[in-house]
Image 1 (cartoon, helix red, strand yellow):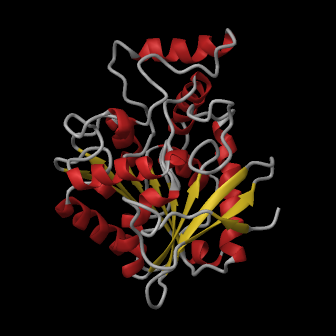
Image 2 (cartoon, helix red, strand yellow):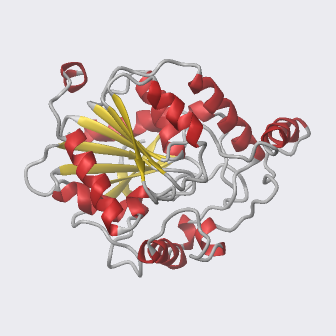
Length: 325
């Protein structure tokens, strides 16, 4: 299927949508015939490269409008994907509110489709990766398998899923036994069909300390309910746990990497993130004081720190192999 224009929600589409000018989206198809949506914000002025954003679970292109504002004004084009099973891309279960994937490696097919877009649009090189949460797990496998980026950065990467020690074995057992009993499309305990930000008040949330950013997320989903997603399926949980275990056993790639981890992180496994970065050549972990899971959408002073560091990483001296690959 050739690229075709797709819906794109900008500041004129309703409350909560903010992004740089000239944003646009396209439909593309994967090798296994899943229709995906990919969105682009061009760089402001002379382009210094392109940042490929790999979002987290439940996320969608427009959520990164504020991030794109920062990156495009610093000279980077920004390309974002709606993964299979979320955003406006094809949902994979009859109940579209349940997050699902048959195999975690299927997301690599989504990356291949995203890379076709970079070629079709002749996006400026070098490329850089910015992966958040689930996108951090997808991105880690991608760079391990040779994704042609000059550098990579991760925010709250899902290299392990945080569960209190007493609940860890229960999560594994539920994710393993449920699908064997034909319950793979069921939600895990303590999850629901509602998007997190619509059921959780700002007070007590685990994403950000910035009330305006939290309100932006809520407003976007109220304005465009089709972007929303609830809890994951038991199959998704099984595949995610297995993917984290598989990736933990593999060596880190030798490329510049900067990973941000909030000191108040309570969604991903902080120890797994620290363990990975301890063995990453040319890698650095930045433990952001007082930050929750969404460091890109935290308080202004935290965002300023994060984007300054990202600009320094992405604007660094090219890696010859990545730049020419």
